[in-house]
Length: 195
Image (cartoon, rainbow, N blue to C red; front, side):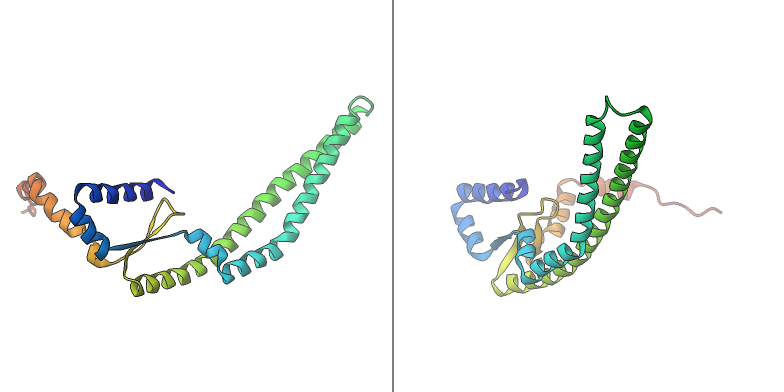
């Protein structure tokens, strides 16, 4: 469980301890749900099909890279075994061949990984958009005020009803409690047009 969810849970528990009546009222009027969106995506039928399709498309590339890695290891073993018996030219030739294959492996691996990531992100974006629509409908039908994603510490709130949005209330209260900002804004002279 991530820190934000733990913090949210702790805040709710503190509310329950400090004011049982308020907590009971909040608990009955505000329902919170938790989802692991990454798990949901990978376990949907479409997510499973996506994984299989990506495996089929990029499996041959992975196999090619594994073969190249095996060739490099074989050259490394040859160089190690024959270090004392090979001529200097043979060792240099083997070392150059190994370096070339290592460079090819690195470049091909980076290219394949970038292509795979791009294809995966495009497909996941499509599934995520559809899943968000399902979450939105489900949350409304089941009267959830908030749906939290435990797999995403960066943006854990997937759904929240506007009735619990307190941004404007906080701004108003802040301005009342700290009027210096408003006074400073009023006191600063407006730019006068040049004559």
